[in-house]
Length: 232
Image 1 (cartoon, one colour):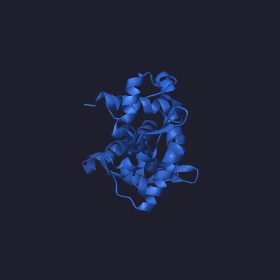
Image 2 (image 1 turned 120 degrees about the horizontal axis):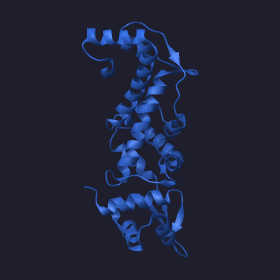
Image 3 (image 1 turned 180 degrees about the horizontal axis):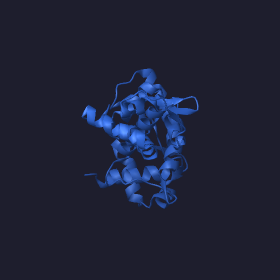
Image 4 (image 1 turned 30 degrees about the horizontal axis):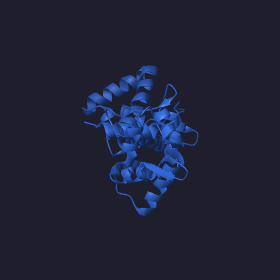
């Protein structure tokens, strides 16, 4: 069960993001009380999330270096890979969260079900799954579907298409090499779900648009005694 301090930490972090503000402004944007905010920024395990500056008044802003540390707990990466990942996080994560976690004008997530680091890692895992799929299949300006269709139908098929997908979301990890993305993608099942969801969407569209392909997919599934979508 996620405790109240973890919830408030996540709320405060998403409320601040790229801001550097005083406690009064933190109260305004987060709807937390002064005591709750003071408690969060004073708890040792939460200090990695926030930077505090004391000049004429206390100013609070978000840190991002902890994100790479969290990801590195789950995968084995070299120092050079760590540096690449850190640069991507520093340059893009705040803008990414601000855009894609915004609902009804507010950046938020349900901290009843996940903590802040769990949400961040899941975002990287999910996006890495999508990105890996496209990197494997993109060929110039089209997506090569030959292997996917060949596996599904049991025959050699040559096919390509222009896939409608919000690739701007993949900008978060565009500078990260594929070998690192594949590691991130496998941190939890969300990565494979993202990857396979594109397979499923493509094959659903192809089978609905071409009865002959649908028939071949069905025959291939029966002859192999396992469905094409479990190939991994």
